[in-house]
Image (cartoon, rainbow, N blue to C red; front, side):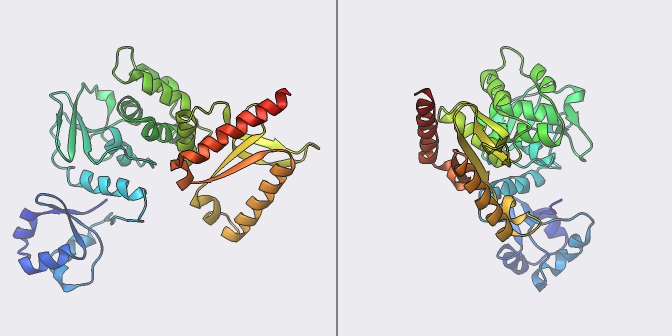
Length: 323
């Protein structure tokens, strides 16, 4: 849990202005007016006034990696400064709730903290209120502050956010949290704004997507008009020898797409070099078995040209089979 501190608290602790100025250059981050996040367990003297706050149990610090994951970390910081400002009928919802539930988005889709309340809708630069009813069983109170339940959270995201945001999260819920489509569908009642997109998100999501990147790739297939790509299909050679399990394989054409994240290499028990050798051998086995193989990095998911090449390869393979 990030440790927040307000300007009022700093004044009550008699933190000198000079120390605050130094801390803001180093280990303290102003998130919004009068609200700060402690970024690190700083050894410098300018945090001596607030050092005792770092000894509280469960304190964590923001982690920035210089990539798209930093968007989620910035939003977590904003959420932390809003924990004590909710009204009795409010609940963190949408992407804010997803992060509080511990889900791992590919795209967060917003810079605003999202809150659902029955009273009114209102948008601020860093805060968005949704005017919607919340039943008692729509709210999870086990996290220390009100958060929409996982089912309600994923349904809300499907209704109000793009597929690139919703499909990876729904897939993660299906895969890791054992939710099911039947629990989400009643929350997507006819007449709801965004229902068509939400139903499409349920169709594209799958528990077979083993990572957010794979689920994101499924969305990109849809965006580029690529159909027939089935997740997690086992490939065999013409002699029946096992080659491997493919992230995606076309249902008719001999086209395979593998989505390679950092984890595929650095989480391998024998290290990244062994993982690279193993992947290369499997790739060669697939090629020798007649497959056209596309190995996509995470960055490739944002490059339209690669999906044009995949679509062309499928078209060519199907035409070849038909002749």
